Amino acid sequence: MLKNVVKDKYKRPIISLRITITNRCNENCLYCHHDGMVSSKHEMTPDELFTISKIAKRIGVKKIRLSGGDPLVRKDIVEIVEKIASLDFKDISLTTNGVLLEKYAQGLKDAGLDRVNVSLDTLNRDTYKYVTSKDYLEKTKAGILKAVEVGLYPVKINMVVMKDINDHEIKDMFKFCQEHGIILQLIELIESESCDDDDFSNKHHYSLDPLEEKLTNISDEVHERKFMQGRKKYYINDGEIEIVKPVDNAKFCASCSRLRITPDGKIKPCLLRNDNLVELISHIRNGESEEELEELFMKGIYNREPFNKED
Ligand code: SAM
Image (cartoon, rainbow, N blue to C red; front, side, top):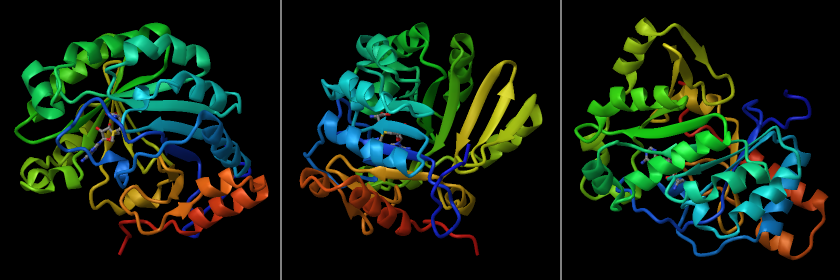
């Protein structure tokens, strides 16, 4: 799998590219870190996104993930997926709030999308409204079920666990996932600008450590994902839970294999930093060669530093 893959100076292979294709979103989650992006109204065309993916492929990237904002608010989302899929990556996925997924799932599948992660923190309508500021719970659930139906596989639910908001719902969410063959991904809340004002992230931070201990005891099997930030996967009664713990986690950073692209076309080496971006889109618009664009990717990779380092 790791043939022809570029490594950064910390010997971390660059396997995946996460492209934030828009900052626009149809929800307004109270904790949202906006994929670590600086606000920008600029977006890239499907052809420009294709060029970026092509260069990524040249340097050995195997997986592309599209994110946002919400990627499904782009009316050309199917065309974008189709263009990128023509490059024959090992895996193309998308992260969405699911509001528009019922409408697009079949088209995305036909265009070559492999799988989808849908953010869903709660199955309770009032909590959903509180967290997202929108009344779209039923739309989101319908989108998730449609994704399963059309064969996007696996479907994962991203649940950001928050103390006193949805921490009591983990069991119910897991049951919902088991019923529909969905993987539950539990995410630890990261501090972000959207929620810093009222100390939201401190008040509602919920450590997943005790839960991991419990899961270790009751799981049929536990796996650790080598290149996906050391995430652990727990298999229980035909169900699957994955744990994402980025907060102050040196191991998470040590096995990070991801490079990012901002909606306005910059290479972003780390979710949590914006001081080491590499300008890319103006070079594409100037018609520079693939070799020159590859050099810019190398610069982005050179800028990669683990945000949390081991002592
Ligand atoms: N709009 C899409 C969605 O809702 O999935 C994609 C963008 S959203 C920024 C991508 C992922 O980041 C979602 O799964 C969301 O739950 C997660 N996320 C956003 N803010 C977060 C935070 N403060 N802590 C942990 N995860 C967060």
